[in-house]
Length: 412
Image 1: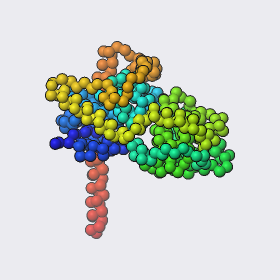
Image 2: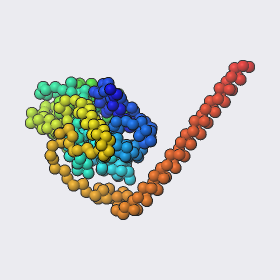
Image 3: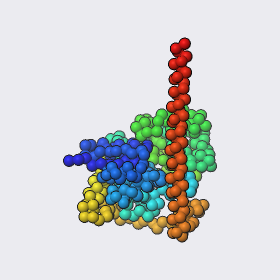
Image 4: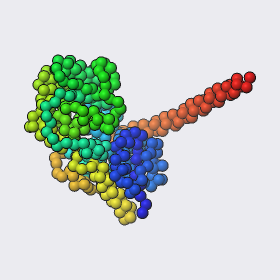
């Protein structure tokens, strides 16, 4: 029996897919495509297309062509949803790009938990969300502990990889860390570790425990501390999963998608929150467990749920090709979302007021703008490819001249 062929549109973030590859064992062949050429994808006849991000233009082109060819597609949610990333990140709608997951461009999205599923479903994807958990975190399940945390004195302060999407946000994050550092220095007997972005570590003058951005490195750090203070980040879930009390360091005080039992949104909160973190109550720990259960599906390995979803999608697509119909993927294929209320998504023009595309509602005008943009993109890609060739030829020529000169010099 031939292994199923899974076409992965990835240039990085391989850690999200590798646990799924391991779970399939010999059942599936994973092809990691860094070119993102729709014609090459379709001509290779994969059984399914898998990606981690679906906002890149070339990835969307691949997904569109795959759908025309009857090839199903699945995107893996790569981390928590966060207000600033969704509505202030220049990569997305705030910077005239396409809003993230509004809508999802693949046939299905594997969400990390119920909380994300509700939001993404409300963004126009009610039939696309499937709750699987996060395969990248599966290895943490063996590190979970059911013991009640005792009073401790070791505290870890963390930030997300990106401390902010604008200069103002980065300055606010730095100020929150400076306040935290100043307060913690007044507490005798409290051992503080720092795992922050490299620029922030230098500005704070602290020894950074960020050796490399990986979960394997993080778990070693977390196992050596009793509590965590962190800016909104997927690492918050990792700390919760390991049973550490976590406070969100959130000076911007933006709307919170990921809930925590403790929050520090001003320096005045530090005096009350830090002692509670180091000696947490059973009540707040129970609430934190509820927050974790809502935000991360962690009842068994997520990779196995993703495998099950992939198998079902491939089976539906094969049956559709056999009968000459378009594949239809039903909602809640994993029977995981149940029934929950999804809000009605406001018009994109309301959420992104400065984005000119979303202020235009005339279909013909939008089609013309898209045609011009796609043509301009083709021209730029061609010019860029020619420029790369000339640069490579120039580099080869310079190397050849230097080698010839060395040979001549050496023969004298």
